[in-house]
Image (cartoon, rainbow, N blue to C red):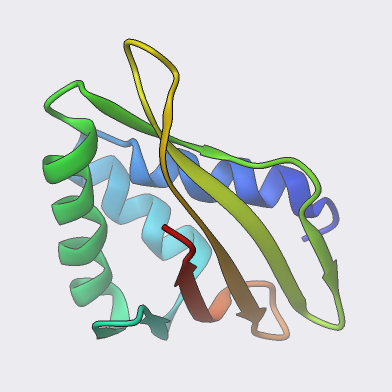
Length: 121
């Protein structure tokens, strides 16, 4: 991972992927097999649970066509970590309805080891 902003955009694209097979391949390409994804309300462990988490978010927020996610500019990273902001916006108006950020820790070979998600609103 050399460009934190490109990483953030790639990460957000994964949450927009409608094809479960392509989404599974994206998870395998980005996350370590034993990766953990932490939110204030849950801990997700491994590729299978990540598929359910990301697929569920897609089905709830993106697939109906009302919302989309976008990476905020100015992602930053050092020493095998990246932090980046994101927004959930209404497709029709562009109004921001939720914002947060993720703090990601990578394995030595560049896969996500842990992903800590924080919600601002």
